[in-house]
Length: 219
Image (tube, rainbow, N blue to C red; front, side):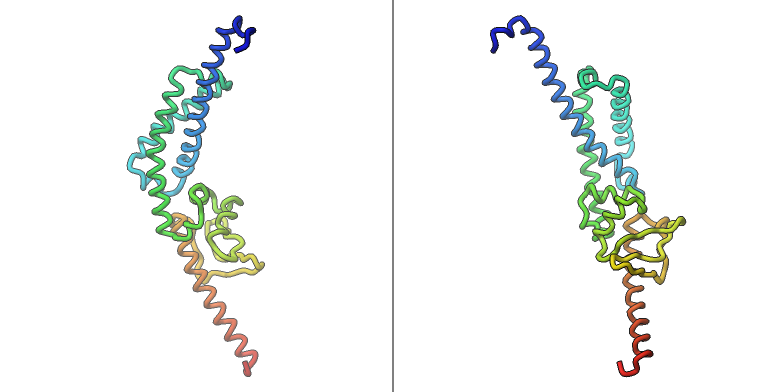
């Protein structure tokens, strides 16, 4: 302890406590933010709410978190935001409640993976991005490539219909039967598209073989 600090002992004590509290609140806040971010994305997934037992509970939790963030925008400084009475306790409660919903999220993702096993190729945050995003989004397209070998992109038309797949070799694979992305959740139409790609590939190979035989009798 410096001999010169005696005069400032009260201020030093105040800032030690203040910075310690700010550190605790900030750490709790960041944990809540990460959990909330994943869950809010998950709730945008078609059919996800049906797999959650306590949807009303999450909506209430969401309102409380949004209220905190709205209040923060009015005084967007670390000190003012973290030293609000009851802020640490409110965030701690939110974190514990979010942890419960995190378990339900894991069950929901596991169910999606069982319906379309290739989803096991994606980490949880990647799967949430794919399921909750737009298929035309470049981020989603990059992740979709992990699910299919040699597929460069899967792009529905303006009506949500997929008639052709584009390969990394620069070739097109027309589907015998178009796939409608609007009828089923993503895991449903992806499974349908996978089967159609297999059928279409077999048919094209048969047609190619027949064409070779006809053009080369000695083949």
